[in-house]
Image (cartoon, rainbow, N blue to C red):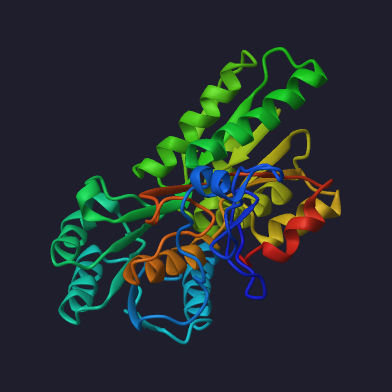
Length: 350
């Protein structure tokens, strides 16, 4: 889901949230008294107008690949849209102890809200809980903290849904082609992360509905080089492949390089996340990459918006409830050659 600076509100699941009013369910011939009695109270109106000044602290892993780089870029760009927001980002790092120390510095600075994309939710859970206990609302971005007391709101992509989308695309296409016992390969990101495990489970569950299973699964590390290495190994081990799902379009650059180097094209491939270069590859029509399932880094833009609303005591104006929801899951959508032009402006560069 994408945030567009020129458009008011949030774009969640196809609906704009944050700028409009929730229409009441009254008929046009009802009396004024009837309308007053049946219409719910509206919450969080005028959210885009300047309000109470808020300092939003931000911490994320190092921008060592396109998706993470886009996360940081989107968060900062969105904060700049608001005159009532001061954006305080700490040095990005892939070192757990350094990220803990960085978050602690934001707690000591008494920021008004925190947006945290942890390297590992389990290992950063305690410092997030420390922030929450200190009265600083935490917006947990993407990799979830296991303790719900550690964050006010979680927002992220649908990892399970990514796997389901990829599984349905592959399963339906193989059924259509009449392939009885397909060789289906899966290249994960970091296998130990819950998000990766959710993606794999969704993939397996969707394939099961077609009577298919994953033939071989190997994890890469969300990097181009690891994508190349893992794909090379899998290609050597399997002389015939029917379909391949790669969890991450950044490491997919390396996966595609290995496929081209091996001169293999007897199978089709589905990517993950929705990078611009993957979309261009899909659009070309000359690649094994036929589709990618979205996991958009624009969620960082929405996280900053949510942090601002929470710190200012506001709700989301398209919802009746007075407060921001505790959990927001963005949908995973399938990008193919048929709809790629719609999504290309939203893609990030790997």
